[in-house]
Image (tube, rainbow, N blue to C red; front, side, top):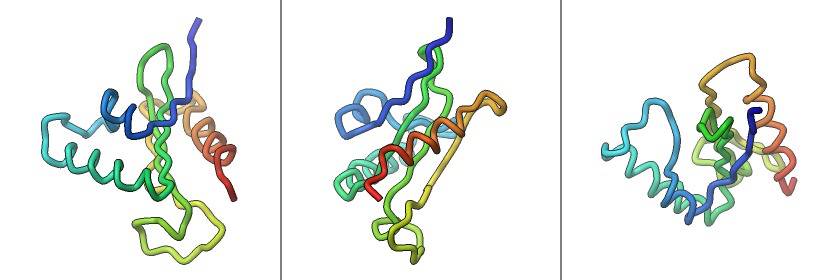
Length: 107
């Protein structure tokens, strides 16, 4: 039986698990810089949630309140999704991630 989990990454988990993107190469400077950037943004309320299916990372969502977004967005009281990625379509991973983000939102 498959077990799907939602894991909210924080500074400590990021150190052990790392960020997740199919295009990320763990030894690249871009990957290292992304993790440093994430660590700094966690202090501002950035959320980074991975979906794990049967102990395999299959997607993630990265979002924050609009006022803290690194994107140029004027949308007070709203969330901004910086990135949403899943490895397979049709399995409901994206729906789970966006639903999970709404449940964590203080807005």
